[in-house]
Length: 234
Image (tube, rainbow, N blue to C red; front, side, top):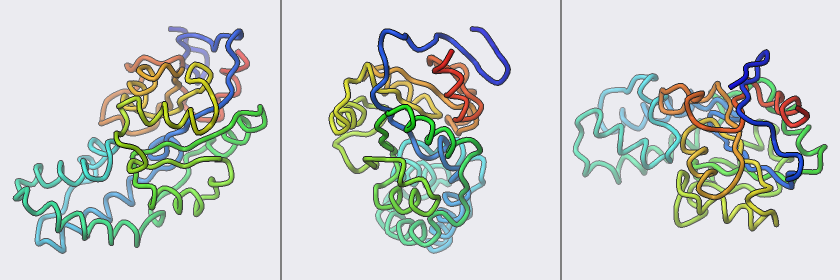
């Protein structure tokens, strides 16, 4: 693997296979939402008389959907699994109330998305976050206009790392998987992309369950999303 400045290359994008579209993850890829998760989760736990959870645990656990985060949190605290339904109801209330309050767009994201669109790529956001939370977050952070489609974790029968959401999103964009770039921050995104037949690029600043994402196979590992311009031009 060749390192060039802030770029971590494994392979250039084949020039004989031009891209028609891109699918972009949300949490940890475009927006740092860890603060929202921590606040909403701890308010939920407080309602149930449970102790608060540490930020580092949330960072290691996000990425597989809110249900997974909540079940993992209850297990981590040694709480009764039967509390899940009550916890889910309270969590939904609190997350909706704080959605975007403690979140910020990562540097380079807006420019990177604008550049991809300037190249004629059709863009979709595909996240394991519920659609009802994803759409207002994108709008609040000024990112919604970049996307033709937004699909949350409840949009399909299965979620990433299953390839089904990527395949369905490709269909919605009218693009073949081999010509649709997946951009994410975790092994979930990479695993789904590889299984779907999509080329994949990973950003290095996301969550990835507390592990170094550079160890996850991808065409490139980028420190900022706007570095995609240099990679595709490489």
